Length: 250
Image (tube, rainbow, N blue to C red):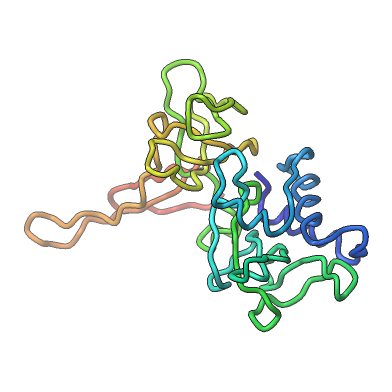
């Protein structure tokens, strides 16, 4: 999977490229093919097909989330025009500046413009290959990992679809970190990404989700809760320490 910052960096490097050389859908393709963590063989059809891929079977699904309107837009999302008209005809990449990078036919090249409804943007989508920035992540970067692979032997298979009959596209060893992106229809499968960048479907039976930070329980007499300090390790696991602690910086 491509980090938010890498996707935006790749798109910005293409600003000024003539529309005749790189239209809007091919801009997104080029970002996915060239940015670190991407897939140089990636392909998809037109913008309308990209939007409609959310309703497709897992093998052909490119969007793993979408909405009408641009409320809540985050860096790394794709913005769309023409949603609700039956012909979604334009797309671009949302940036950390509240703008969108897209290849504009009217302007004749790849540009970065404001992401507003006035400019025609009226839909958002999350692409399976591009991470979306988590506003709560430290330093504004994408937080990786909310589960750990837990198997006693062998590897956890990562598949093209939510079925044991689907093609195996990658393998994860015990202890590997997984970014769970969404559940696969309550079937015991999830769609997620590994730190190495591979994304696909995996059985949730072999994943242990991270525990959320604990706030500290109240005592039986209703007294003041004990002092607790919740830390997040480098591997994404939360640890709660009881008592008074002084956190020293390296």
